[in-house]
Structures are given as structure tokens and as C-alpha cells.
Image 1 (cartoon, one colour):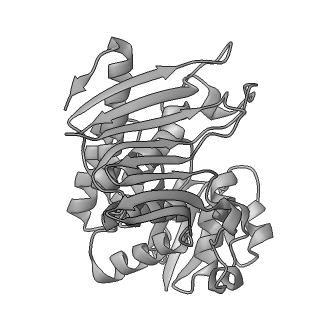
Image 2 (cartoon, helix red, strand yellow):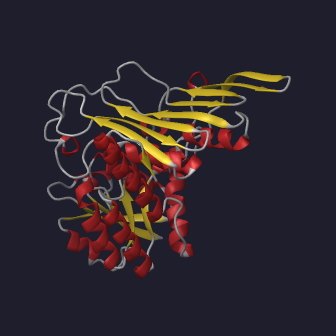
Image 3 (tube, one colour):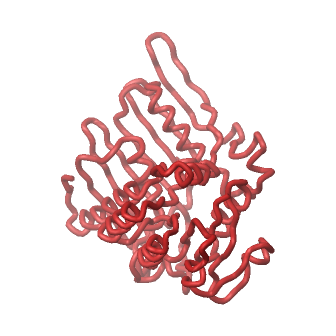
Length: 345
């Protein structure tokens, strides 16, 4: 049994981390750091609320610290947890700079502790489907890949740290890690990069739109996110020498309550047929043109992998290195946008 402590109990912790840790038999939530409330105790009566990081780290029974605070605190809190002999899961983004990321990577290595970033969207059903589709060769050689994560938030949210001019705020640090990590999982590091990062809404203190292009040999990868997209755009568009795949809509797991019973259900993470993507391929005389069933999403697999990484003393799938590479590309995206130029990696 891996005993866990959670740092902060905001929306992300309430929606993903705490329910997953509570539902999976290999974990037990022992303590949650909340400065002013006791909401975790209300949701999980066996949990104890603490008010300081020291109280959490001084508990010798706690094996794993899950950090869900605003991005600018990730480095200092993860460093303290690792040096206290704890394994660490960091909510994305990993850190706000690649320098910080490299330091955490080295500390985790020296301490012999598991350090992971919550790149849970590797376990989105649509991305899992795309991953298998690319590996299958059904589209032939891929020449164009587009991944979008759009929203319509035309008013700034007052007193919300992601909307403020502070380190790690803005949509590139918020949505960028998911899209960049998925692209790296599929295609590896690009050869060149171009980015256009903007403030589209009047009065925005930080970026609320990005358009990033990764260049490979024949493949062009485009990653986009914005807060002023009211008309639904495709989540994924893939074009290859044998055909195309287009998928609309976001993964359904975020709208499904995470409980042990639900995770055990054969319907967990499954999409209704009307949400499936369209596949149109031609291979010789054989032509396929219709819906492709979306694989069932599996956010629980992230923490199941963390459990195995800790028990087996190995690197997790979403490793510190993966977190660092994502931050390096975010920094290059800002640099490219400022220069309005293509950067060679």
C-alpha cells in the first residue's frame, strides 16, 4: 500500500488525483495540505488535513507526494519532497523552466526516487486510438498531423492565477504540455519549430492562444489552442499517403465520476458511436470509409504505472525527462514567437 499526501485540494486534485488514488487499491490518501479549508476531509473522512508542507513531509509513513499547486510553486515543493525522501507526482506543467526541470531530474536520480509528471492525456481514448492508428500504417506515411484543444472563454476570470502575469500562467503552460507531450510520444523531438503565441482577448495579462508547428522530414505537426473558439473544430486531423482520419470532441473521462465501481465497469472511458472519428483509407483495391471505434480511455493506468514504478524501482512512463523535454519546447515556442522565426533544434 502506497501512502500518499496531496499538496493543495483545488479542482484538479478533486477531479483527478484524489478520486484515482482513493479508487485504486494500491494507494491510500493519508494527508492533504489545505491552507484554509478542510474539503478533502469532507470528501474522504479518513484523510487528515494539514496546514504546512513541513507537516506533510515529516510524516515518515507517507511514501508519495502529489503536487497540484499553481505552477510557480512546483519546483520548490517537489525539491523539498524529494529531499525528504518522498516519491513525487507533479501536476503538469512539470516546472516553469527547463533549468528547474533538470535540477529536479538530477535530485530524483540522486535520491533514488520516482519523479513523474501528470501527463494523463496519454491515456485519453482518442489519443490512444490515434497512437494505434499511426503505428498500424493504415494511413501510410503520415504527412500532416493537427491536434487542437479549444475553448470559448471570452471573459477573463478574476483572481484566477492562470490569467495573471506570473510565472507559468497562460494557455501555453496550461494546454501546451498535453499537446506537446502527445506529439513527442508519437514522433519524437522535431527538427525545427515555429510558434505564434498571442494575447487575443482585450486586457489579457498572459497568453490565451498558441499555434505551434513541429517540422520533421516529410511530416508537419500543428498544435493549437485558443480561448476564443466557439465553433467546434476537430480534435485530431491526420493525413497520410493512404488516407485520412478526423476526430471531433474531447475525451469523456473528465465527465465521468471516478470511483472504484466505475473504473471496474466495462463502459469506463468508452465513447458513444456518434462520437467516433472518421477513417478514410485506400490500400490497393481495398477502400475503407467510415467510423473508427475510439478505444476506451484509461486515466487509472497512469497511477497503476506509478505504483509499479515505485515497487519495481524503475522510471515511470511519464518520466521527469519527458516533463523536461516538454518545458524545453515551451521555452523554444516563446522564443520563436518573439522572434517570429523558425528555430532549428
